Image 1 (cartoon, rainbow, N blue to C red):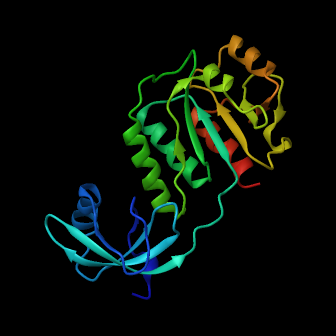
Image 2 (image 1 turned 90 degrees about the vertical axis):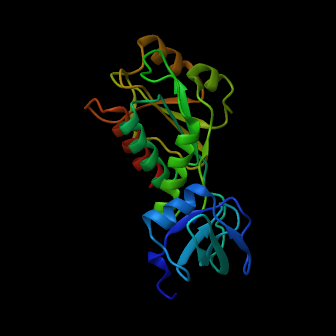
Length: 238
């Protein structure tokens, strides 16, 4: 079990401690049994967003159940990362899947779908989105799981926003500083518009909010998911 880095990495709700045993739920059982084809004695890596990451061993890989024993802790839980919020208008399925995956990889801690005048999608499957967030965290080896907030009207969301937390709003065709010139050393948010862009009225209202800083992502008009990744890449990796 020395080369545990190639073992499947699984998020669990259970508390984790050495010598604990438990059985996986249906979806995880299906994944391990039918996709990864693990056998008795196979290693798995386990994390729950609270207790760090642990190495486990499959004790029984049955057709209807799969149980694991926790062997040892691999990594302690890291200190809470800097809060980084992503506010975005929902887009079409495949592109939103991509956006969520990359947001998790780029250390977003809070994901906020917001509804704007030009939003393409207004009904979201929050359970599916949470599963996508978990899968992305499993793959990129994060120890924490970003929080998914309920979708709501953009200005309702911003009306309840903590004014001490700065918000960088990507406003195309607007007098705005390049995003790389805007500091975000502590908790902050990034706001990305819908595929059709913000309306002129929305832009003006956003620019008047004291905690909102309009930013530019360059001369080209970017797709919504590209804009999110471009903004996050500057802020999250700075």
